[in-house]
Image 1 (cartoon, rainbow, N blue to C red):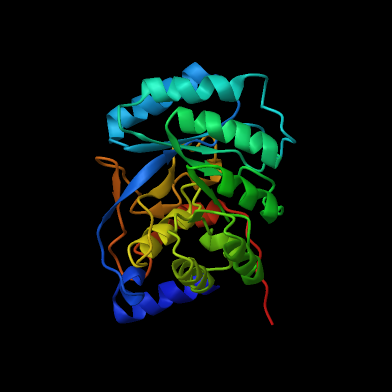
Image 2 (cartoon, one colour):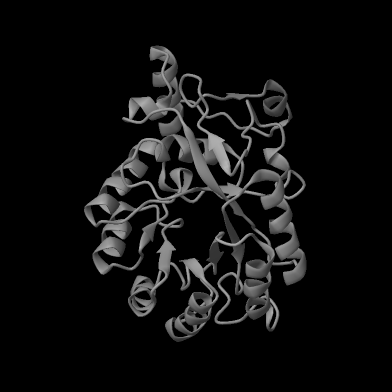
Length: 281
């Protein structure tokens, strides 16, 4: 509802949402974001390097550990293999980001984090179970790379606690999980007050990436890039043909959609195929 109202407001005044919140239309750097753990290290490295060659990505993110894995890897040795494989495959100077999806206890996260530092990784996302904020704070205090998180946190009280603990070095709200742009702007302001940059969670090519582009074109504490999923429509079949115009990566950058509101239109054919439910008073 919140994002629909922002779209309506923008269309009524003929302006993009990013301008309504103090920003301007421009191109933003994006990072190539892998969602996969079911892929061998050499294949993942080759996939990311190939996409970098075609689209000019200057930053890539890939998965380590196992989701909520209780210190276990997806299979033994995968994390230790995939990190150097990707580092060797991509261009020199590429920013390396990893996502552990709540895998580790603090001791294991610090052990893995030191290996990541040695390999030049600069972004260690959700190292510990996201609800154990003290654990994440312990990891952040022990490591020199950026410990990041926040995608799962939909309560402003949780964000106040996280920022008060200095649990993360980079705030990663998700516009959709959090309940819309209005609340995400509040989180961005809270992060700015704590001196932290924002890099939103936008892990698929649905409207969440459109929302994130507008947000990042407006907030003063925007981080250096926007998350951009590299997974095709076969991985997320519902994202195929969702809206026009589509988002295109050129030279590692994506333009904020330029039309009024969010700048995109949902395709009628997509809506006709979708399961939908209507509620009414």
